Length: 475
Image (cartoon, rainbow, N blue to C red):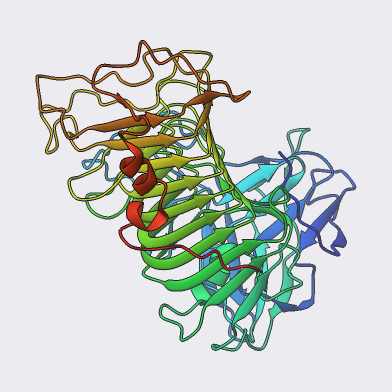
């Protein structure tokens, strides 16, 4: 994968001594002496060959007006207990090691201080350390970047100046562009700017580009995030439950993109990727009246975790087992879910709400080995077997689903009368009715005319979503 950073970079020629006796050019972003830089900028150094990251050295940013150290990244600090996302997924509360930590949206995350893609090294300063109307200098120790021939590389310090001020606090729309040509360079920067309770809906328009950043926010309302184009506006990050294991308290830290305690939020027309495997959501939603419209979500296990009330329209989700971890009421319309391994979902619906309801949508499993939803043995938990689990399919096209359709439903005997593992008019991809003669005995086939009321109710947005009828905000 290539990080797309489109800018007019300065060709910076370092001395032979700095580059281990070689003449080379290093492209810098922001360029040396650049004015009107957004304070949420990343720093990008593009080398003539792919660099590797050293285990020592620092990157330092100073305020040139008083030579005050504003931010520092120390490469001797490990990025995570599992920097490649392949270690334990359990929290180790006795671990006293200091890891690279960034405060994002008010919550602490372990993070990669530098990510190298091809020849470009993107440096992630700690969030919200730079300010408007300031001039900064950047200094990099020689140990930070290592070149292909084994030599270490550095740059002379370079400077840039930030814009005098940001967007008006009452602006109804701001624009994000990776090349720094708009209001913000990063999605997170624009979200941090957005007021928590605006008097009117705020739109964040994200221009085409690759935004490799961890996105998280809390307690905001009336917010639309819209990409310029679905396949070319890409937001993603390498994260999972091993890289960011659970805290003692607080929301999950393993998604690439997540938000908590929100209302009336809409995501439209872009792609979210999680680049690690394991328990690795592309998207985690905890909020009410959330719209996911014309989106592409690519995660791994638990690729999409849901809490609250959510409307998913004309979107595609891909994961590799328990692809939907569903605590919320979600109405899926004209959408597609692809689960490349295991069960498509683990639906954890509690009493009194609806679960995952698919209408005129498509579900594709793993070569005939997948089921729509599983309920593993939770007899030792607070909610053994999730007896109110609900997943309803209406006019849904399918492929790769085992003849049993559902399960396994495990554990000691429990009351299954409240399970809603229901289907009506399930088809193959060509529109032919599938054989449901071997379906799990606790599932149900809805039929006309006897189930006409139930079919009509579950086809109704407001019924599934607790009285809310979503309206997609157009561009």
